[in-house]
Length: 280
Image (cartoon, rainbow, N blue to C red; front, side, top):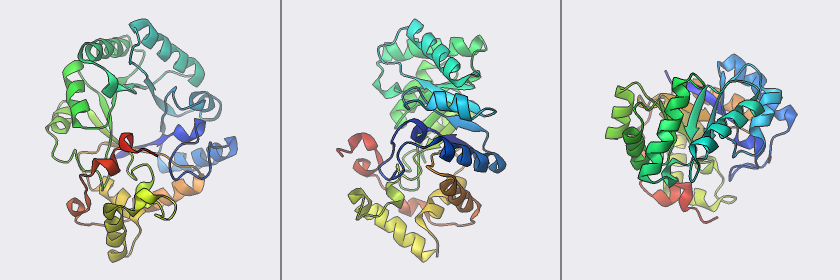
């Protein structure tokens, strides 16, 4: 069964094209965590690049395991070790998992060196698992080459973005005991957005998702979540919310029992599903 962790980008940043709340207040974070714990959500995904999210986790979210990241482009081994030390101080606890935040930006020799630094930290017992955050299969392939053992790969995956569905790299990762962790199951909110407010949501693939939801008597959110539950190659899911109410709505969608022709809802339009291509 897919396990779930809570994303924290909104804890430190005004993050997301559909985020109308801005950076979360302490009260909103506390209320969200109170909902998360009974749902069995026991881990948080964060990064030093998420504003002051790590500090706020340290103050507000004791008792949760933490996955954080390092920015590796141009960084020396010492820089990476210091980044982990600084994250540990800000979080006020040991880091459970450490991912490379900017893996696609690294060259071949840099990838090998960075992977070695993270694996050394794992061998010293400073972290439990190491891995990468990527965008496409090519990132996963280079990570499998660079790491002696890749524990976690965080990748975008959604009912709209099914590029990894037949990936040889995903099969190799999971066969070796590694975990495929999905993020952006709503394509950073576009899949649920009102096209009058977010023009990208007028894309035909998003409209087709909305029509499919109507045909099933449900919502696009329920279909997005149901896709994850129905997808055997997704081991873990990162969910980002801006309020306790949003998390409760996600939980209701998670509990729904819906089946659909998932492959018919996928799009290969990378201008929609890859936010690096968004000009605004």
